Image (cartoon, rainbow, N blue to C red; front, side):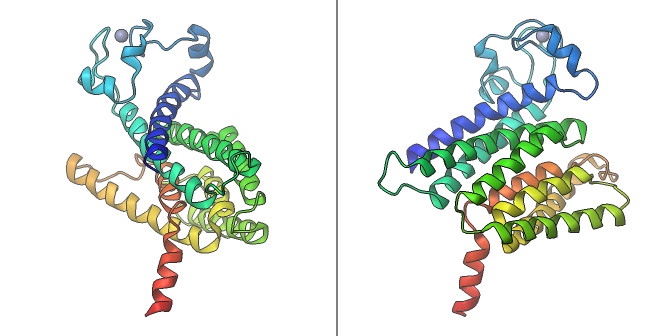
Length: 269
Ligand SMILES: [Zn+2]
């Protein structure tokens, strides 16, 4: 278990680093230009190529004290933030895979490896979407659709959720967010967020989706209040995208199935 935790954190950190690069190269307007310039990692400011030493997740940021190594300009905080969330999400995904699939003594079990590949791909896609939404307040549709396909695949492979519950939970939580979107007239959230919860329904089921949505609004409110206290800004609605909270809450919910523990506890009382 310790080995799996260690590896999954490292994988998550590097996926976070990749997600930062991906969002930079897929800027809604400048993306094409940026991809043509170079296929290596370059400095955002002066365009000089970065060596591997300046590209280590979080470590480089700390050593360089938040400044670029070449031209010493302050790096955006969301780089190490996405990398750190990558480490956390990687760890959670490792837990999910081990708890929900697990090792059944057969090393050549197809389900064991196929589910691992799906979970790894889901980590990468979730970080790409998270980094993108954090920067442009938009959910990139292609990675979201790819994640949806994987989620349905995982559901069909034989999760405890089952196809019917997955489908109905997805539709229910998507309808809830669409309703919220219409009521708030699109402030603070977009329709992309409704696509995200449609993905999660296939993996979480009814109670899981409910729990995850609750966690989203709790964490969102806490971070929102925290930012108001730190910055003194009052109008945060336009600044805080919902997507990263939805994604983080999903990963916090999925591995441990807290709602099951809650149900058992209620039954026990
Ligand atoms: Zn530079």
